[in-house]
Image 1: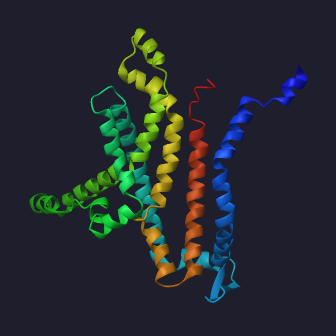
Image 2 (image 1 turned 90 degrees about the horizontal axis):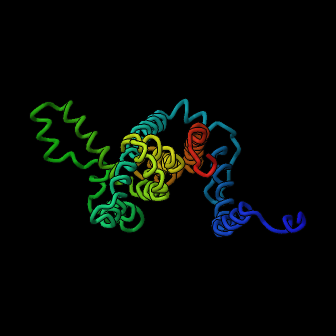
Image 3 (image 1 turned 180 degrees about the vertical axis):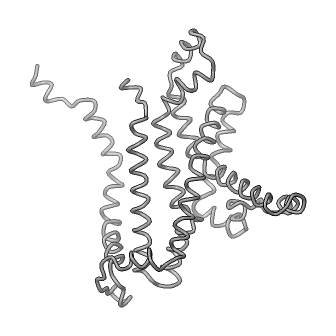
Length: 293
């Protein structure tokens, strides 16, 4: 009996093996195409590029990083701006996505159409389609292009200060709408995995919809909240409209300062990695796993 148990694989082991098989193409691709550029990038961040021919470098250690912190005020300003945008947009995006997912998860007419509408920005916001939209002025809309006749009218009637607040609010809402497609889909998947018997039992006990949300919905979708939290932060930190990403690209493309750009990128990556690690460690203790409790 014990020998037969040893020969067979447990359910956990089989699922682990299946997961490794699914991600094996990515692992192979990363080993073939990403490992070497990452090593070169790390070397660049700790070196001074003396010649573009053959990528000749001279080792300077942490000098590039120290110069960024002590001398490059533009980089620090963009760094703080990136953090501020992420702190503002992430919670708003999560709350908005969860509310929309709850609404379109109900048995309403045109539910499939609503799901498609909210996911369309994800399809338009990447690749060749987005390049065409940006070239035709769509970047003004994505970055808060509501500063048109409406904002001008508000500024004239109630003052420029209040108009600026309205412009910032509309810009934030536009960004949230544009960036919430993936989060809504993930929340929908989490909501649809909740057994309906839980809600039926709670209603029999006299629970209200508000109590159902706090006692059933929110705890069960908490792993999805954690996933969306990490995804939204990384999406915000690496967004093309992020000023620090634009600064890094400027160092590479316009100035040819590959060493400085690499140092900028690695400092930014380490900060993002640490923040995501802290969020994961803190929120992981608060998540509810229905299979374990």
